[in-house]
Image 1 (cartoon, rainbow, N blue to C red):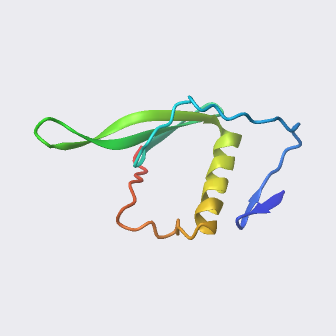
Image 2 (tube, helix red, strand yellow):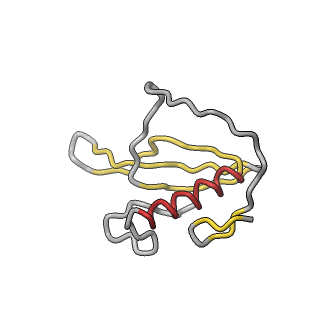
Amino acid sequence: MENIGGVEVETFNEPVVQVFDNPVGPEIYAEGSQSMFAAGDNVSIALWAPRSDPNGKLYRVIVGRITLPSRGAHGLAVALFDFLNKTGLNPDNPGPESGTSHAN
């Protein structure tokens, strides 16, 4: 176990793999997460962004989904929380601009 951002995280002895950046890889802008779904060992998160119709009415539109094995999802959650704390963004008090919804 390792303490990351005040959270005890199970560490795994995996071989180090070199990471290459893909400059043409897809990039998604989302304002929040709409839902989360677990199937087997995988967790899927639906991401939304605001879109308007021709009359100006706003909608939340799912713009993408990310699916991770539970171990990867846990690592992402811990790393994101730690990053937000280190950069001075307070995850415990996201404020009125936060777009995250935990509706299932």
